[in-house]
Amino acid sequence: MSIGTLLFIAQRAFEEEIVTALHDAGFNFTIAQGRLAARIGEQGSRLTELANAAGIAKQSAAYLLRQLEEIGLVARQHDPRDARAQLVVLTEYGRKAQLAARDIEARIERRWQDLLSPAAFKELKQHLGTLRELVDRHAESPERQLG
Amino acid sequence: MSIGTLLFIAQRAFEEEIVTALHDAGFNFTIAQGRLAARIGEQGSRLTELANAAGIAKQSAAYLLRQLEEIGLVARQHDPRDARAQLVVLTEYGRKAQLAARDIEARIERRWQDLLSPAAFKELKQHLGTLRELVDRHAESPERQLG
DNA sequence: CTATTTAGTCAGAGTCTCTTACTACTTGGA
DNA sequence: TCCAAGTAGTAAGAGACTCTGACTAAATAG
Image 1 (cartoon, rainbow over the protein chains, first blue to last red):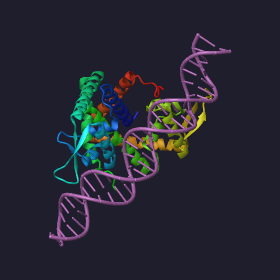
Image 2 (tube, each protein chain N blue to C red):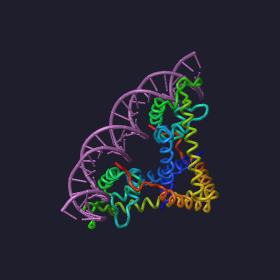
Image 3 (cartoon, rainbow over the protein chains, first blue to last red):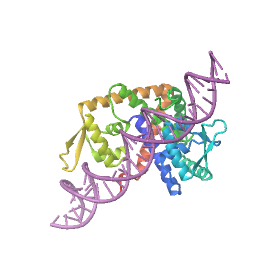
Protein backbone atom coordinates (compact mmCIF):
# COMPACT_ATOMS: atom_id res chain seq x y z
CA MET A 1 0.00 0.00 0.00
CA SER A 2 1.53 3.27 -1.12
CA ILE A 3 2.28 6.09 1.25
CA GLY A 4 -0.21 8.19 -0.67
CA THR A 5 -3.04 5.88 0.26
CA LEU A 6 -1.84 5.67 3.84
CA LEU A 7 -1.79 9.44 4.08
CA PHE A 8 -5.24 9.59 2.59
CA ILE A 9 -6.67 7.15 5.13
CA ALA A 10 -5.12 8.89 8.12
CA GLN A 11 -6.04 12.34 6.89
CA ARG A 12 -9.59 11.35 6.21
CA ALA A 13 -10.02 9.67 9.58
CA PHE A 14 -8.75 12.79 11.28
CA GLU A 15 -10.99 15.14 9.36
CA GLU A 16 -14.07 13.01 9.78
CA GLU A 17 -13.64 12.85 13.51
CA ILE A 18 -13.15 16.60 13.81
CA VAL A 19 -16.26 17.40 11.84
CA THR A 20 -18.38 14.88 13.72
CA ALA A 21 -17.17 16.08 17.11
CA LEU A 22 -17.67 19.73 16.22
CA HIS A 23 -21.12 18.92 14.97
CA ASP A 24 -21.93 17.18 18.25
CA ALA A 25 -20.62 20.24 20.07
CA GLY A 26 -23.14 22.36 18.18
CA PHE A 27 -20.87 23.88 15.56
CA ASN A 28 -22.08 23.33 12.05
CA PHE A 29 -19.68 23.96 9.28
CA THR A 30 -18.21 21.84 6.55
CA ILE A 31 -14.72 20.48 6.12
CA ALA A 32 -13.85 22.99 3.43
CA GLN A 33 -15.13 25.87 5.53
CA GLY A 34 -13.17 24.60 8.51
CA ARG A 35 -9.97 24.20 6.56
CA LEU A 36 -10.13 27.82 5.54
CA ALA A 37 -11.22 29.17 8.91
CA ALA A 38 -8.40 27.29 10.61
CA ARG A 39 -5.90 29.44 8.74
CA ILE A 40 -7.18 32.82 9.87
CA GLY A 41 -4.53 34.52 12.00
CA GLU A 42 -4.88 36.38 15.29
CA GLN A 43 -4.67 39.75 13.54
CA GLY A 44 -6.87 38.69 10.67
CA SER A 45 -5.85 37.50 7.23
CA ARG A 46 -6.36 38.58 3.66
CA LEU A 47 -8.56 36.54 1.39
CA THR A 48 -5.70 35.90 -1.00
CA GLU A 49 -3.43 34.78 1.83
CA LEU A 50 -6.03 32.30 2.99
CA ALA A 51 -6.57 30.98 -0.51
CA ASN A 52 -2.84 30.40 -0.99
CA ALA A 53 -2.49 28.80 2.42
CA ALA A 54 -5.35 26.44 1.72
CA GLY A 55 -4.23 25.78 -1.83
CA ILE A 56 -7.44 26.90 -3.52
CA ALA A 57 -8.40 29.67 -5.94
CA LYS A 58 -9.31 33.10 -4.62
CA GLN A 59 -12.81 32.61 -5.93
CA SER A 60 -13.23 29.40 -3.99
CA ALA A 61 -12.00 31.11 -0.86
CA ALA A 62 -14.46 33.94 -1.43
CA TYR A 63 -17.26 31.44 -1.80
CA LEU A 64 -16.38 29.76 1.50
CA LEU A 65 -15.81 33.02 3.35
CA ARG A 66 -19.22 34.27 2.29
CA GLN A 67 -20.74 31.23 3.97
CA LEU A 68 -18.59 31.54 7.06
CA GLU A 69 -19.73 35.12 7.34
CA GLU A 70 -23.38 34.11 7.06
CA ILE A 71 -22.90 31.49 9.75
CA GLY A 72 -21.36 34.19 11.90
CA LEU A 73 -17.91 32.70 12.30
CA VAL A 74 -15.96 35.42 10.52
CA ALA A 75 -16.30 39.09 9.75
CA ARG A 76 -14.69 41.21 7.04
CA GLN A 77 -12.99 44.49 7.73
CA HIS A 78 -11.40 47.02 5.47
CA ASP A 79 -7.66 46.73 5.38
CA PRO A 80 -6.39 50.23 6.20
CA ARG A 81 -3.17 49.57 4.30
CA ASP A 82 -4.84 48.71 1.01
CA ALA A 83 -8.21 49.95 -0.15
CA ARG A 84 -8.68 46.94 -2.40
CA ALA A 85 -8.10 44.44 0.33
CA GLN A 86 -10.19 43.13 3.15
CA LEU A 87 -9.12 41.67 6.44
CA VAL A 88 -10.93 38.52 7.44
CA VAL A 89 -11.17 38.09 11.20
CA LEU A 90 -12.79 35.55 13.48
CA THR A 91 -15.82 36.70 15.45
CA GLU A 92 -16.26 35.85 19.10
CA TYR A 93 -18.27 32.83 18.00
CA GLY A 94 -15.58 31.96 15.51
CA ARG A 95 -12.93 32.00 18.22
CA LYS A 96 -15.06 29.66 20.30
CA ALA A 97 -15.28 27.29 17.37
CA GLN A 98 -11.54 27.49 16.85
CA LEU A 99 -10.90 26.65 20.49
CA ALA A 100 -13.32 23.75 20.32
CA ALA A 101 -11.60 22.49 17.18
CA ARG A 102 -8.21 22.69 18.87
CA ASP A 103 -9.50 20.72 21.83
CA ILE A 104 -10.76 18.01 19.55
CA GLU A 105 -7.54 17.97 17.58
CA ALA A 106 -5.61 17.58 20.81
CA ARG A 107 -7.90 14.75 21.83
CA ILE A 108 -7.34 12.91 18.57
CA GLU A 109 -3.61 13.43 18.82
CA ARG A 110 -3.62 12.02 22.35
CA ARG A 111 -5.55 9.00 21.21
CA TRP A 112 -3.24 8.39 18.27
CA GLN A 113 -0.31 8.77 20.61
CA ASP A 114 -1.76 5.98 22.71
CA LEU A 115 -2.54 3.82 19.71
CA LEU A 116 0.98 4.10 18.36
CA SER A 117 3.34 5.03 21.16
CA PRO A 118 4.52 8.43 22.33
CA ALA A 119 7.84 7.93 20.58
CA ALA A 120 6.30 6.71 17.33
CA PHE A 121 3.76 9.51 17.29
CA LYS A 122 6.48 12.07 17.83
CA GLU A 123 8.46 10.64 14.93
CA LEU A 124 5.40 10.62 12.72
CA LYS A 125 4.60 14.24 13.39
CA GLN A 126 8.20 15.30 13.09
CA HIS A 127 8.71 13.63 9.74
CA LEU A 128 5.48 15.06 8.39
CA GLY A 129 6.64 18.48 9.51
CA THR A 130 9.97 18.07 7.76
CA LEU A 131 8.23 16.85 4.66
CA ARG A 132 5.93 19.83 4.66
CA GLU A 133 8.83 22.27 4.63
CA LEU A 134 10.56 20.44 1.83
CA VAL A 135 7.46 19.85 -0.23
CA ASP A 136 6.30 23.43 0.15
CA ARG A 137 9.72 24.71 -0.82
CA HIS A 138 9.91 22.43 -3.81
CA ALA A 139 6.38 23.21 -4.91
CA GLU A 140 6.38 25.97 -7.48
CA SER A 141 2.82 27.00 -6.79
CA PRO A 142 2.67 30.33 -4.99
CA GLU A 143 -0.36 31.24 -7.06
CA ARG A 144 -3.38 29.33 -8.15
CA GLN A 145 -5.23 30.26 -11.35
CA LEU A 146 -2.65 31.32 -13.84
CA GLY A 147 -5.23 32.47 -16.37
CA MET B 1 0.38 22.99 13.22
CA SER B 2 -1.87 20.00 13.86
CA ILE B 3 -1.12 16.58 12.51
CA GLY B 4 -4.36 16.82 10.54
CA THR B 5 -3.05 19.75 8.56
CA LEU B 6 0.32 18.10 8.10
CA LEU B 7 -1.36 14.99 6.76
CA PHE B 8 -3.46 17.11 4.46
CA ILE B 9 -0.45 18.89 3.00
CA ALA B 10 1.53 15.72 2.40
CA GLN B 11 -1.42 13.86 1.00
CA ARG B 12 -2.30 16.66 -1.34
CA ALA B 13 1.26 17.05 -2.58
CA PHE B 14 1.41 13.35 -3.32
CA GLU B 15 -1.87 13.26 -5.15
CA GLU B 16 -1.16 16.35 -7.18
CA GLU B 17 2.14 14.97 -8.39
CA ILE B 18 0.61 11.66 -9.37
CA VAL B 19 -2.13 13.25 -11.40
CA THR B 20 0.23 15.65 -13.12
CA ALA B 21 2.73 12.94 -13.98
CA LEU B 22 0.05 10.59 -15.26
CA HIS B 23 -1.37 13.37 -17.33
CA ASP B 24 2.05 14.03 -18.81
CA ALA B 25 2.33 10.33 -19.55
CA GLY B 26 -0.88 10.52 -21.57
CA PHE B 27 -3.31 9.08 -19.06
CA ASN B 28 -6.24 11.32 -18.38
CA PHE B 29 -8.33 10.58 -15.37
CA THR B 30 -9.21 12.47 -12.25
CA ILE B 31 -8.10 11.97 -8.69
CA ALA B 32 -11.39 10.43 -7.64
CA GLN B 33 -11.36 8.04 -10.58
CA GLY B 34 -7.78 7.08 -9.80
CA ARG B 35 -8.48 6.48 -6.14
CA LEU B 36 -11.17 4.01 -7.05
CA ALA B 37 -9.30 2.32 -9.87
CA ALA B 38 -6.28 1.86 -7.62
CA ARG B 39 -8.35 -0.46 -5.45
CA ILE B 40 -9.37 -2.91 -8.15
CA GLY B 41 -7.83 -6.30 -7.42
CA GLU B 42 -6.08 -8.73 -9.76
CA GLN B 43 -9.16 -10.93 -9.95
CA GLY B 44 -11.56 -8.03 -10.19
CA SER B 45 -13.60 -6.40 -7.46
CA ARG B 46 -17.23 -5.80 -6.69
CA LEU B 47 -18.64 -2.31 -6.86
CA THR B 48 -19.65 -2.41 -3.21
CA GLU B 49 -16.20 -3.60 -2.17
CA LEU B 50 -14.60 -0.73 -4.02
CA ALA B 51 -17.00 1.78 -2.52
CA ASN B 52 -16.24 0.57 0.99
CA ALA B 53 -12.52 0.51 0.36
CA ALA B 54 -12.59 4.04 -0.94
CA GLY B 55 -14.95 5.25 1.75
CA ILE B 56 -17.65 6.50 -0.59
CA ALA B 57 -21.29 5.60 -1.27
CA LYS B 58 -22.13 2.87 -3.75
CA GLN B 59 -23.80 5.45 -5.94
CA SER B 60 -20.65 7.54 -6.06
CA ALA B 61 -18.61 4.49 -6.96
CA ALA B 62 -21.06 3.65 -9.72
CA TYR B 63 -20.76 7.18 -11.07
CA LEU B 64 -16.97 6.94 -11.19
CA LEU B 65 -16.93 3.43 -12.61
CA ARG B 66 -19.22 4.49 -15.43
CA GLN B 67 -16.64 7.09 -16.40
CA LEU B 68 -13.73 4.71 -16.03
CA GLU B 69 -15.54 2.34 -18.33
CA GLU B 70 -16.11 5.07 -20.91
CA ILE B 71 -12.44 5.98 -20.79
CA GLY B 72 -11.66 2.34 -21.32
CA LEU B 73 -9.77 1.68 -18.13
CA VAL B 74 -12.17 -0.86 -16.65
CA ALA B 75 -14.73 -3.37 -17.83
CA ARG B 76 -17.66 -4.91 -16.02
CA GLN B 77 -18.32 -8.62 -16.00
CA HIS B 78 -21.09 -10.67 -14.53
CA ASP B 79 -20.15 -12.27 -11.26
CA PRO B 80 -20.90 -15.99 -11.71
CA ARG B 81 -21.42 -16.39 -7.98
CA ASP B 82 -24.12 -13.76 -7.65
CA ALA B 83 -26.49 -12.70 -10.39
CA ARG B 84 -27.00 -9.30 -8.78
CA ALA B 85 -23.34 -8.50 -8.64
CA GLN B 86 -20.80 -7.37 -11.18
CA LEU B 87 -17.09 -7.86 -11.24
CA VAL B 88 -15.10 -4.79 -12.14
CA VAL B 89 -11.81 -5.60 -13.82
CA LEU B 90 -9.02 -3.54 -15.31
CA THR B 91 -8.67 -3.62 -19.07
CA GLU B 92 -5.31 -3.98 -20.75
CA TYR B 93 -5.16 -0.19 -20.95
CA GLY B 94 -6.19 0.01 -17.32
CA ARG B 95 -3.34 -2.26 -16.31
CA LYS B 96 -0.92 -0.05 -18.20
CA ALA B 97 -2.24 2.95 -16.32
CA GLN B 98 -1.90 1.12 -13.04
CA LEU B 99 1.69 0.22 -13.78
CA ALA B 100 2.44 3.80 -14.76
CA ALA B 101 0.85 5.01 -11.54
CA ARG B 102 2.93 2.60 -9.50
CA ASP B 103 6.09 3.81 -11.17
CA ILE B 104 5.26 7.37 -10.34
CA GLU B 105 4.38 6.48 -6.78
CA ALA B 106 7.70 4.73 -6.42
CA ARG B 107 9.45 7.77 -7.81
CA ILE B 108 7.77 10.06 -5.32
CA GLU B 109 8.57 7.69 -2.49
CA ARG B 110 12.20 7.65 -3.52
CA ARG B 111 12.31 11.39 -3.59
CA TRP B 112 10.69 11.71 -0.20
CA GLN B 113 13.11 9.16 1.09
CA ASP B 114 15.95 11.38 -0.05
CA LEU B 115 14.35 14.51 1.32
CA LEU B 116 13.89 13.00 4.75
CA SER B 117 16.30 10.12 5.17
CA PRO B 118 15.83 6.42 4.51
CA ALA B 119 15.38 5.76 8.21
CA ALA B 120 12.93 8.59 8.73
CA PHE B 121 10.92 7.65 5.68
CA LYS B 122 10.70 4.09 6.85
CA GLU B 123 9.45 5.22 10.24
CA LEU B 124 6.92 7.51 8.64
CA LYS B 125 5.48 4.80 6.45
CA GLN B 126 5.51 2.26 9.23
CA HIS B 127 3.66 4.48 11.67
CA LEU B 128 1.10 5.41 9.06
CA GLY B 129 0.58 1.74 8.39
CA THR B 130 0.08 0.98 12.05
CA LEU B 131 -2.28 3.89 12.37
CA ARG B 132 -4.31 2.65 9.45
CA GLU B 133 -4.88 -0.72 11.03
CA LEU B 134 -5.90 0.81 14.30
CA VAL B 135 -8.04 3.53 12.81
CA ASP B 136 -9.77 1.12 10.47
CA ARG B 137 -10.45 -1.28 13.30
CA HIS B 138 -11.79 1.44 15.54
CA ALA B 139 -13.90 2.98 12.81
CA GLU B 140 -17.43 1.70 13.03
CA SER B 141 -18.27 2.49 9.43
CA PRO B 142 -18.37 -0.67 7.35
CA GLU B 143 -21.26 0.79 5.36
CA ARG B 144 -21.91 4.17 3.90
CA GLN B 145 -25.46 5.41 3.37
CA LEU B 146 -27.51 4.09 6.25
CA GLY B 147 -30.75 5.40 4.76
C1' DC C 1 -41.93 -20.24 1.37
C1' DT C 2 -41.55 -15.88 3.40
C1' DA C 3 -39.01 -12.04 5.63
C1' DT C 4 -34.84 -9.89 5.57
C1' DT C 5 -30.61 -8.64 3.70
C1' DT C 6 -27.61 -7.44 -0.03
C1' DA C 7 -26.00 -5.67 -4.91
C1' DG C 8 -26.78 -2.34 -7.69
C1' DT C 9 -29.64 1.54 -10.18
C1' DC C 10 -32.17 5.97 -10.89
C1' DA C 11 -33.19 10.66 -9.90
C1' DG C 12 -32.22 14.81 -7.86
C1' DA C 13 -29.86 18.06 -5.11
C1' DG C 14 -25.91 20.21 -2.60
C1' DT C 15 -21.04 21.41 -2.13
C1' DC C 16 -16.78 22.65 -3.75
C1' DT C 17 -13.90 23.67 -7.27
C1' DC C 18 -12.27 25.78 -11.47
C1' DT C 19 -11.93 29.11 -15.70
C1' DT C 20 -12.88 33.37 -18.01
C1' DA C 21 -13.65 38.04 -17.67
C1' DC C 22 -13.90 42.10 -15.12
C1' DT C 23 -13.29 46.47 -11.72
C1' DA C 24 -10.60 49.11 -8.75
C1' DC C 25 -6.49 50.15 -6.31
C1' DT C 26 -1.29 50.07 -5.89
C1' DT C 27 3.28 50.36 -7.39
C1' DG C 28 7.44 51.01 -10.10
C1' DG C 29 9.56 53.45 -13.23
C1' DA C 30 10.23 57.24 -17.14
C1' DT D 1 3.46 63.43 -12.38
C1' DC D 2 1.66 59.97 -15.07
C1' DC D 3 1.21 55.58 -17.07
C1' DA D 4 1.95 50.53 -17.51
C1' DA D 5 1.93 46.55 -15.06
C1' DG D 6 0.69 44.01 -11.17
C1' DT D 7 -2.44 42.79 -7.32
C1' DA D 8 -7.02 42.30 -4.43
C1' DG D 9 -11.17 40.92 -5.00
C1' DT D 10 -15.81 40.06 -7.60
C1' DA D 11 -19.17 38.00 -11.04
C1' DA D 12 -20.97 34.41 -13.76
C1' DG D 13 -21.11 29.96 -15.18
C1' DA D 14 -19.86 25.25 -15.64
C1' DG D 15 -17.99 20.79 -14.17
C1' DA D 16 -16.81 17.16 -10.79
C1' DC D 17 -17.92 14.65 -6.84
C1' DT D 18 -20.69 13.55 -3.27
C1' DC D 19 -24.84 12.51 -0.77
C1' DT D 20 -29.92 11.00 0.34
C1' DG D 21 -34.22 8.79 -0.83
C1' DA D 22 -36.56 5.45 -3.28
C1' DC D 23 -36.42 1.48 -5.93
C1' DT D 24 -35.64 -3.55 -8.34
C1' DA D 25 -33.95 -7.99 -8.23
C1' DA D 26 -31.41 -11.70 -6.34
C1' DA D 27 -29.67 -14.24 -2.21
C1' DT D 28 -30.21 -16.06 2.29
C1' DA D 29 -31.89 -17.30 6.93
C1' DG D 30 -35.50 -19.28 9.26
